[in-house]
Length: 317
Length: 263
Image 1 (cartoon, helix red, strand yellow):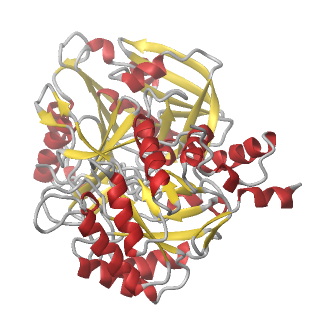
Image 2: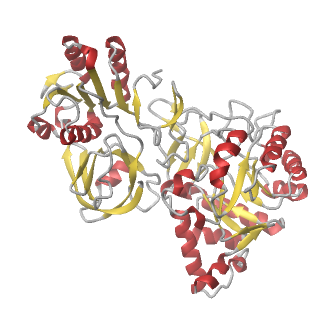
């Protein structure tokens, strides 16, 4: 039973094979170190790392996280040790994990993206790159996701998106997956830029720009004033984006947005996603992803579906 | 080792106005937890509240683990609604712990409000392990309203402790604050060999810092912050310290008072 069943969850994103369609999303899983103590991370379909920038980044002022009804607003601000430290101290442990390792990269301009990709090219054990074009958490300085001209996120502009993805494409044969912002009027046009620039897949989507105010002090709750909303509150919103983009753009989609159980994961797959990434759910229940993998397998067996691939875009409209 | 598990609630009762004690059958898995460590508790399996809530461990006793909590918001209200024999999802023990003294020291335990929970665990540990100079432990416990003087009977019974109870309303113990009491005591001491362990609100730490600086007394405090994962991955609770950025959940919650930045 075991051997046969393993195959029903197998899938792939371009050249990158996945043992199952459940990944963990960037920023909620660090570099997997902390979670290793809690469960067997080899069971995951893939790990998308915390975003790496060229230089170390300190991130935003505290408080960085707060709760809203069915959601979480965070403004971590891409705190990370920089690409060189990542290669030296994080990668050796990450590549020992028997799953797809997708490194999330961020930069403020094309040159920064190019330099990170060049440095990572020499490193073994990386299966793919997620290009973070959409971190909503920085307003005080022009860093990842923001262009030098304005406070626009890269993923809010079709040409800027094309430019960054194209630059990365030229430097690597690895699977590249731009991560898009939901804070857009037309995600399809941004996704088309990714396709035109040679992306292998797209990640839909990052968090929703958000804020909260303490009425006693009249101050914003978050040190950074604004942050990104995640959690079950956003699931229906992102689900609609996944469906919409999958109808038009011929690229595999990794969907992430408030997945809290296997039903949420399956909804995204039926809407058109190839794989899903659990984010905020990890923070609440560290073992949630492995639970979801088990439950998806059970669902497929119970419904006589021989491969998870058969469910991709199986929505009946 | 960190364990995430559903534990049965053996007792969840009000011990004072708005303050509850929850005893969990943690089947001995937390027996090695150390004072200062905390557990991250999921209020229920719905999305309201969504995040876990961190609580200092208050007691480890014959395989059971207890926390004390004050109902201040949605998360703690949700905890207070649980009945005995229900199960609750707990992740822990998490974070670092108080560092025990080397050699004989004059120990001051200072607890403000709910800070009595980790301090009480620390007192149990000192008494059980006969840490330090057992005839010279001063406990300073202060609250706003006298009814919040939880555990006072247990503390009074403990023969090792020189207990100082303080209330802001003056109805019980002495009228005043923990810091006023500490300053009066420290003035009379040869303060060369003193050590402070403190838990409580930030305002108390600020005042404590001034006195510790003046008399040159080292202090360890448990710090609080809004928290996400509790295991050091999400970087939601990171603060700036004099030794760089620290995750309250993983590098803390116990810090040396000198390490923290008090703006």
